[in-house]
Length: 325
Image (cartoon, rainbow, N blue to C red; front, side, top):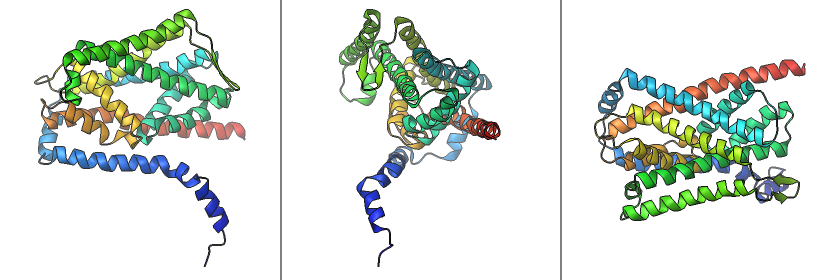
């Protein structure tokens, strides 16, 4: 007995349509499951009372500082889109850029596969302002590169200032070797700045022309990319207790590692991945305190923005529907 559509089903499987449709979701859920298992092994024996006590011990002043850091992070994220649009010579109002950027990152950080989900949201928003699909693709690539550039730059800085960071993730790595890696990474970032200063020729790929950013744009990337990451890491830093705290640069370095791993995992919200890397990266601190700080981060950087972004999407779609009528 057949379903009467076997040829169509076979073609869908043969073309990999099912894999393309559900692949990221399956991969993300698998990463969450594996991370949750390893995290459970790390935290077994931890009671909810201990976690609640650590959460309640966060001073109100530190809550306020974490809130300010979260606001600063999302302001810097809007700068990603603003720089990219300036690079593309596209004129869009700052208010629209801010709302689009906020919605894009709030949704994509929580949904996983951030490049894919972020591209869909940006296309829906910026196409209404007249940007072509190619321009929006370039904008997404530019924003992703700005994030990667900021991560690379700060990773080099943290390894040079706190070379002991390498030992937290790679057993036996000497501080001299870690500092050498940091210097090499900084040289890589300097090469990018040099290329802008020298005005390298644009790269042409069919209809796509990728022009090397001018020095002004690169200088903005040098500010915005690190600023967003520093602000995001500060959310966790302010939520951690001062006792046993290894210092901001160490927290920043661990955050860069954990947040990058969370994004690359495609897991929704980096669930489990972020916590696993952070708990292992801070063995000198009490695990309930670390988890409480990460809950604050998820609340201020992920959950509340996610809820607000849904409202923005609903209002945008309602106005678009009214305009089309």
